[in-house]
Length: 175
Length: 277
Image (tube, rainbow over all chains, first blue to last red; front, side, top):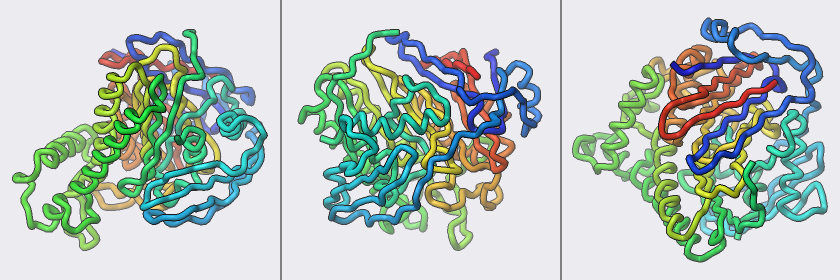
């Protein structure tokens, strides 16, 4: 029987869980680090009977009393998709500075994407990561694991791409 | 820790297919070559072909013809019958929380495999791409189709792919990050489109969760299970804990975050979860 861990938490900055699927040729370890903002330990009310049963074998779920300061985000207007032209996403204000992405679309295909405003003056890909990394630091995730390659979230539509962080992550590597 | 090489060529490609932005990243010695750009172009073409076959929006697509009774599913293209069979399996594996037979705007039940096709088509195109990449040396690859992700790694000197899970309550924030070498991450939720995901058993919109993220060996099932978990809402956790090789992160409407991990899983891909507080 495999061991099942179910942990239920009440705040976002509690348990940090990193999953790793390893290929047979790679033995690189994945490390999870302790969130810096954890204060106190409290198992929240489980939402299911199963969670209650499993909580005995689950690691401590921690409730943070000092919630990270939220990054601000502006609602952005959508650019048309499926057509041609150059579209500039709204500047998105973050803790770390302003990020703005511009894409060129030809027949619905993005032919060019560039971040036209970045928080820092560093090399392009470092800048994008500089944008992403502090957000993760706010969640108390280790910086060495914070070099984000992709964002998983509720379905991003074509219209939403220009405002997505994924577009900024792509921009550094578009040929 | 193995040595990581950070100066390997890496290239990203983006196209809009099925109404989604689809990003493909390749890293490795030939990542910048025309040959590999051609392979990626082929992968996008395969996805466009699946879109043409399975679209429920294009009135004359093969699936639309089945939906309105012009054609019969049993006579359909083998690819469509394969998807229909997978949808049946998905219904069984999710206790009916996933179904390809859904009521349309007029209330009539019609064949709608859309909920499975996206993840399946992306995984299939990605598998072909990674197989063909091997002919050009060792490369790693990633695809992100509107927030649903598959990664594949053959190198041993590269860092893990780092996938961030968006916080459905504030999309400028990240909920978690996870490291994958080969596998898939799919998130189901309503944050991006604001639309409802209906429970196929009742037709009522699922309201228990803000988002459900599944991590597993391949995107077809991670995507189906994420949708099913979202539909199951508060009843998802016990079911998720029974899934071999899959881990999950759920956010509910009371701001609770639940994680389900399955360490020590047997199978072609070993899932390893490390938990710290």
